[in-house]
Amino acid sequence: MSDNKKNINELTDLPRYKNEYTAQLEEMGITTIAELKEALAGDDAKKIEEVVGSKSIALWKEELGVDASEAETEIVESETEVVEEGGYRVKLKPELDEETKRLLALRNEMSNDRVEFLRQEWFRYPRLGEKWRKPRGLHSKMRRHYSYRPNIVSVGYRGPAKVRGLHSSGFQEVMVYNPDQLDDIDPKTQAVRVGSSVGFKKRQAIEAKADEMGIRVLNRVG
Image: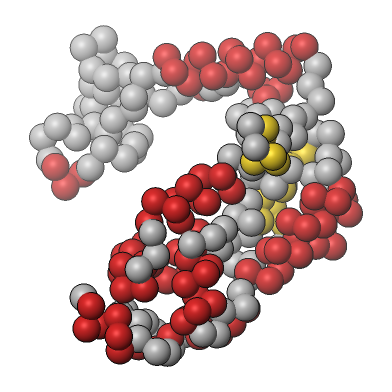
C-alpha cells in the first residue's frame, strides 16, 4: 500500500474514483487531496460516504492514512448531536394530549404483539417468498379461516385510528422538496422528511431553515 500512497497526488488517483464524484465533492468544498484528508477525519466523512459508498471511503481512508477510529468518533458525535462535552441536544418533541400519548403506546404494544402474516403455502414454494398476498383460491382453507391455517390480514389487527400514520415520535410526517414548503408546517404537531430526490445543497438549505423555525427534520444528514 505504501507505493500507492506515494502516487496519489490528485483526487482522480484514488482507487474506485469516478468522474461524477468531482462535482459532488466540489459542492462540499473538496478539490484537493489535502482537503479530502481533512474532511475524512472530520464531520464531513458521513456526507462523503453517502456520495461514494462505504467501500470506496474505506479504501480512501486506508490509502491516505486517515485514522478510522478518529473519523468514526466524529461521526458518532454528529449523529448524537453533541452540543458541548458531556451534553446532548434534545430532539424536538410534538405537543400531544394525554389521549394521543396513550394511543401511541397502545399502537406500539399492538405492533409488538401482532402476528406475522405469511403468504399461503410460503413453506412449500421458496420462490413465493414471505411477502403477503391475499389467498383467493375457491377451496382455500386459509381464505375460509380454518382454525389450523395461519391468520390472514384483517381490519381487527389495525392500530388506533387517531394515531394511524403518525411517526413513532408522535409527529405527523410531511414530505418537503424545497425550503419554501416549510412555511406551511406547524412545528408543534408536524415534522418534515426531505425527499430522496433533493440535492445536497438544497437539503442543507432546508435543514438550516428548519432549525431557524424550530421544525424537526426526521431524516437529517447534516
